[in-house]
Length: 310
Image 1 (cartoon, rainbow, N blue to C red):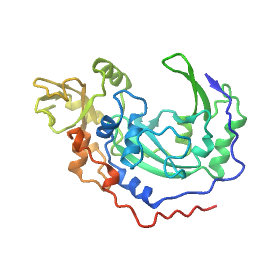
Image 2: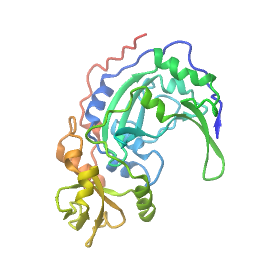
Image 3: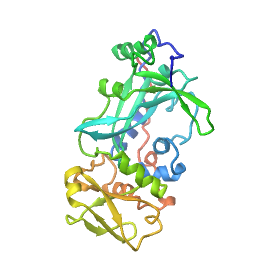
């Protein structure tokens, strides 16, 4: 159910904020698999757990429900899951904030982080401010009917498990595309089969595990436990990925999960991280006590360049 917006748009552009430390982390995050950190910091199946993982990698508390902006109360960090659909990059609508929090302040300065929906690997970032024409376009939602005019910013009430409604602000996927924020089709962004994913997840109760396809015949050994993996090499060649069958023996990590493989040449080369570390993280071949944190690998600059501009 859609409700009227509760916060009017600002009359003036917000100051543009920047931070050299966050910019360095954003550059290094391209190619980062979020799966191992999500397993570490959030319960399996929890909503937004890969966003929690991103927060943890950036050196922030993984669970933060405060109204303040994520980074030093000056820059919000938004994780957007993307995938390929009919040759174009697609995404879902995005939660901005709970309904009692001003969405315009939340969107005043944003670091957008885009992760592939299938592999949960970061494929791009974008620093952005809600100013000028962008503010004018989004501000039109204030005067539009939430049902008949199809505004790109809405308040939606969703039912909780206990039956109560939890209104929140949402941005439409159309807005993200129209503003040119989504990354272009390219390495690291795969098609996504939501029906297969949901069926496999319902069967096993956990997300499927990825492996890199290396055998052109569709038969190889799992690098987590050594058991056999079988998949359609033709499907991998056509779509860049395919469901996989894991035979016996199965390791403790592999037994309770579904499986899929991705074409290695379709993966995004990491911007600054070692390739072997990225592959270990992608295939989740890292012990929980050995999961590394991005912020511990990126030097913090002496000057964060905190100089807001009008």
